[in-house]
Length: 378
Image (tube, rainbow, N blue to C red; front, top):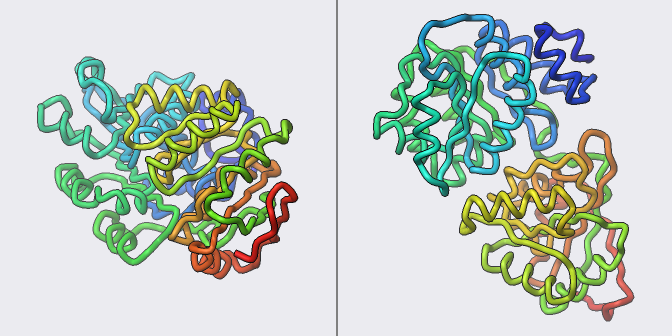
């Protein structure tokens, strides 16, 4: 469906067109009209499906249409990570460029003071991580009494990160009369139970189930000994046509170590994970987006906030031990119809993980060969 065929007001349409959007994704075309009618939504959509616009556009429009005299928070968007909060904030800025609806992102890892100062001025839309939100609420800087809309983004990741109790505490303080939009990439029973507690007569929208991977991503696996993975990665990155590559590590320590090892070989790289300061993480992400570094090494939680339009190459340096995580990882490439490549390294200890991944996605990945390494029956 074309954006122009959706019930979007002219100033938002102008911003959408300026951003280069013409065709709405499935989640957008299904979610936007229902949200504008005031209904609750459970949306199951994986990374790269245009989920943020599906709630940001109608939230902006609803708040614009309904004029108020107070300066208290009117919409709350909860996100699991700092990176995702920044990404969502950027989207609100883009779509709301021609509106007078204000927004603010608050998250941990940075000073409270600028966030407190911004909150004192008043804000319509607050995008927040649960920890920092409750911290500032308890200090008296946030008033929940006038919230009309609640958005929970990436609810499954919030559950994984142990935020479910904080989320319930926050929701208990919100007005019972509100609109709630609930988004999750996966819908396990615990998430479905949480959704039932928070929403009223929602419609459920399922787009691209987590067991599927985009046809635009070419997937392959290398069987390689653990101590030869670095050599293989360097060999792959010797292809200068790969201008940017997102590499996944299971651990924070492993990500740091790999970044240092690549730098020693002359490959520009940086690591991004939860132990890094906010400034450090944002600098690494900006350098990667701006092609100042070729390789960004990320842990799964940190990678949830990475949203890059043109990312041609993803490497699973270490396979995830949860099969669904593989789908999220490679969903970073092959977006918006562009072609992508996802390469996985599998050592003898990861064969069970590979089997689980292939059972989930429903096919056997192509086994790649590399003449730079001895052939091993891993």
